[in-house]
Image (cartoon, rainbow, N blue to C red):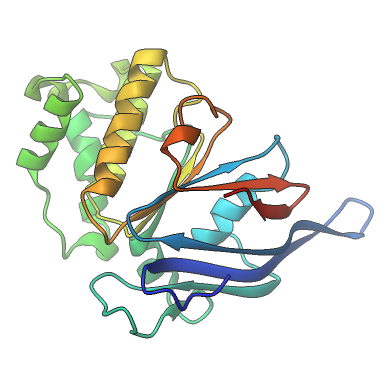
Length: 240
C-alpha cells in the first residue's frame, strides 16, 4: 500500500518484526505487513490474542524496532506533497509527539485528576503547548461530569474514570495518529459508550487526524470503521 495518496497520514510497507525464542530460533511476530491510515478515518484492527495486533501498535508508536520495511508519517500542517518522516530517521520524541498509543491499562500518578492532566506539560516534548482548562471542562461536560471532577483524587477513580482521564490526557496533546489498544475492554457498558463517542468525535473534528483501533468488540466498534484490517499469526489482511 503506497503513501502517495494525498489523504495518507501514516503508511507502513513490508514491515517485519523478528524476535529470538528461548531455543535461539528466530520468530516472526509481524510478517511483511503493509497498510495506510487515511485522514479523518477510523481503521479497526481485529484478530485473536497473540496474533500480533499489539506488536503492530507498538511498532507504529515507535516503541518497538522493525527488522525490515518502512514506516512513514506526514507531519501535522504539512502540505499534501511534503516529505514524509521516516520512523528510522526522526527522533523518537518528535515521532511520539504525533503518534500516540492509548493503552488498555492507564497509569496515573498520585494526586488529583488535574495533576494527571497537567503532567505531560512538564515534559520537554510538550512545553510548547499550553494546558487548556476550558477544553477539559467542555470534554467533561460532554462525558456527563462536572468541573469538580478535576479535583477528585486519582486514587479513588473507578477503572472507567481512570481510562477517561488517560484518554483526555492524550487527546489534549493533539496527536496526528491515535493508536488504541482495546481501550474499552475493561469498562462498563455506559462508560465504554462515552469513551467511544469521545474518540469518534475527536477524529471527526479534524482532517489532520486518524485512528487505528484494536478491538474484539466487533458489534459496537466495527460499524464505525472506514477500514477493517485483520491480523492472524503476524499476517495483516485488509477486509475492506
